[in-house]
Image (cartoon, rainbow, N blue to C red; front, side):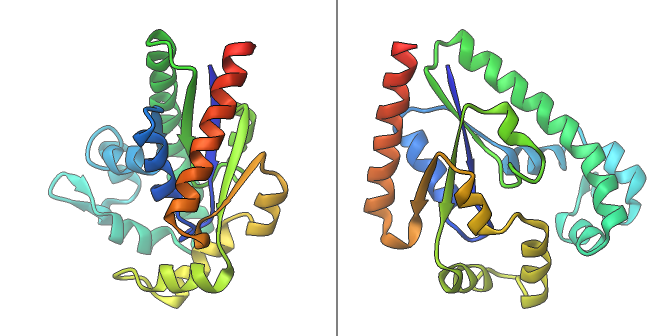
Length: 198
């Protein structure tokens, strides 16, 4: 089974690209979605103990939590120490199910793949990219996004140019959905063939 790491900076089109893999029947583990679920279930008591202000109706309010940790290195480290092991456990469970079900290719959708050393857990890396002006326009059109928050998020992420240098595959999502979908199809064909022949 080949494990493909999918990553890309904010606003690069990673979620759309992940969906193209799902459309082709490739199992995808979404680290962001896992975190959102953890904030409503397993992580609530641990995060709530460290950041009580973020507790709301028995869940973690992500916007409040974000305001507490973005730009606060100590707070971010504390949060990551709680959340990353829980996400990793879910990831391992996903991989075990995929192996049992005979998947030849799986995708780990990890926004901070390089930042957290995640490239060591995958066989190949796909980076989604777009020109900086396209990225900025996409991100700033999101509700509740500010220039300051965008800059703070970017500062945490490995620069796009470095990501591209370290990638096995690159998809430029600014070229349109059809091109991106076709590129995903090509990657799936190559990797599943490789999996069969290994």
